[in-house]
Image (cartoon, rainbow, N blue to C red):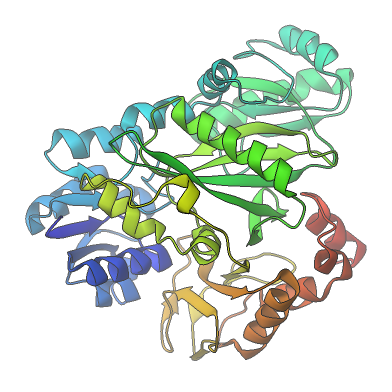
Length: 449
């Protein structure tokens, strides 16, 4: 096992990893920007190193600065968390070539699954269901028209190197295709430095379902069931749950087996997520793989009892998984609400000083956050400041427990999205589990919010 780990991240995920290190008896090193000098992760870690100014490009995305901090503090391994450098294969290469252990999948797996065109080709070879569309990159608008006619409108144009909803265009007619294609290429080039795009059939009423996988360096690979992630706006998740209220036992088995097949195709090691779109008839298609820990990992931890961050560390240290697929059982239901420093309906950021913070508690309520009374939320990073996760024997009790937890939450001094969660949890369609990926946006429009 490692003696000391550097966490190349900030916020609640850095705190989460630091806590794991403490429980494993491992020393922890936090890195921070000048804007995060008083952040909780710098206070909880055994050591903390400033790596640059507030701007991410000069601090959390500054590979040279992160590596200098690792050398300065004599760590054995680096955990990237999620976001920032977590899916940067070049960074993983540098970590490994510098003699440190990378707590994550191989750079080769990251490159394969990080390029959506290559990933689709690999999934096709593995027999994983794919959305109808182009077999690879689409080079011009004329080729795009031909593919769109075969797949049938509407279609969606996606950046191969994309993520977070950038470099994506939905097209409903052939006449609109050339303009959308050029726009998508331009956005992809500007956002990712790569204008490669591909085309897929746009599924109009799908759900976003993902399968958690975990592999070790000894050839063992398991799934930890699925998560429901359809509650999203602008491709950004707001609330997640496990298991999905839509997936039955038969579909679950087929879905999770497809997730394992996808991960096996790239010899995956560590924690990762296979994302699918599922139609109302329960047919499903691969869309992408996230080669890192996910924001929503706590809901999976709660229904399975498996500590995913701990096993990321153990696997990186060379340990075998201590359980087989047959030993992993799901128990009850878990829901996660993302707490953001933003207007609950306009979604504009709300940085500032937290005058008062009170976290909810009680049975089966978990709070993953990196805030405290007096903490100044900086304007430079993602607006998520924490997560509330609840667990119960069934979904309805879990919803009621989350409603109680949200009611107890108090954050004064900044605006948060607490009211959004209050209204969403009380919504009849949500309570019935009757929604898809367009539900939240359509609901907000209906309320004129």
